[in-house]
Length: 254
Image 1 (cartoon, one colour):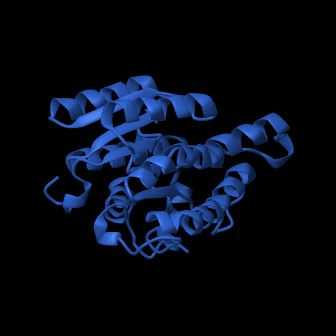
Image 2 (cartoon, one colour):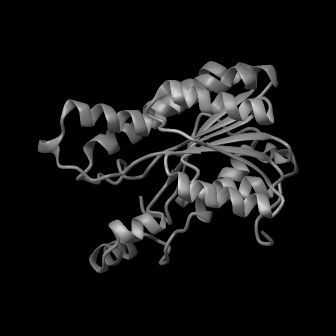
C-alpha cells in the first residue's frame, strides 16, 4: 500500500461494495480495507470472494463477504442488512457490480433484457435505497455508481449493457439532486477498458489491443487500481465538494 494515498476520513467508515470479489471490485475492497474502513461486499462468486476475505483478514483488516445474486432485490437488501448488523450504519456505497457479456441484437429476449438491466442498473437503485436512510442518520454519506465508457465511444455488440450503463448517469444526477440536502454525495466513476483477468481472458486479442493503443492517449494497459485510487479519493472528505458528476478514467480514449 506504500504508493496509495491515505485518507484519514475513511478510517472506521462502513463501506459496501457490490461485485467485490474480483477485478475492479476486488481492488476497491482491498484498498478500502487498507484504509482502515470496515468493508462489506457482495458477490455471486463465492470461492474467489472467500479467498479475498481470508487474505485481507489475515493481514489484520475488517472485511465481511455475503454471497448474493444482486438481481434478487430482496436478497440484496438482506445482504446489506447483514453487513449493517455487523459493522454499523453504511456511510459509503460503491455500486460496482456489472456484467458486460456480449450479445447479438437479434438474439435478445425479454427475459435476457430484464436480467441485463437488473445486474447493470437496477441493483444500483435498490442498493442506494437501502443505505440512504443510514446516510441521513449519519448526516452524510457517499454513493459512487460505476459507469462505463462503452456507450460513450459507441461500442456495439452489447446493446443491453450499453443502454443500462448510459442510465447510470441519469440515476447519479437524480439521486445527487434529491439527497444533496442530506449531505449525501452521489457521483459516477466511469472506467475505460480496464485489464482485469476476465477482460484479458475473454476479450483481449492482438487486434483489439492494437486498436486500444491507437485510441488511448496513454499507451499502457489500465489496471484495477487505476479505478480503485479515484474511488478512494471521491469517497473521502478530500472530495467533499464533488457530487452530481461523472468522472472518466479511460487513459484518454474518449
